[in-house]
Length: 156
Image 1 (cartoon, rainbow, N blue to C red):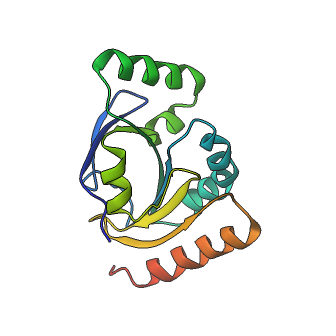
Image 2 (image 1 turned 120 degrees about the vertical axis):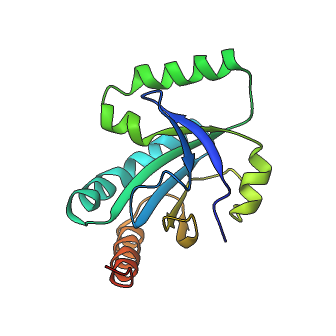
């Protein structure tokens, strides 16, 4: 499974293309389809932030996935999200994707938009691991274990 090439802008208005712009050797991406999914992502963020600070080669992102819309709609939505997120680091890691959602979901084998998904990608966008749903101690441990094992196998 592979992340399709996607274009977006982060909330600092920087244009990015993924997987080309992935920073880490292992990249955690939270994929959300509904506004209320942000609450689910927020449950994962403390662990992701701690891991990013302490694990070299690990980086995380948030990809809100929205249907394609015109320039005005995108500007309104992006500026609304930007206003609600004062932290520049959070803005930098939040990349809104305006695309054909069904094609994106099919490429990543996401059956529906009922919950969030967390994917680990390598620098080329290959899927290394994935999980869906809200944070729990078990899911957090599964993420930490996967990242540890994957980074052990990354060539120096």
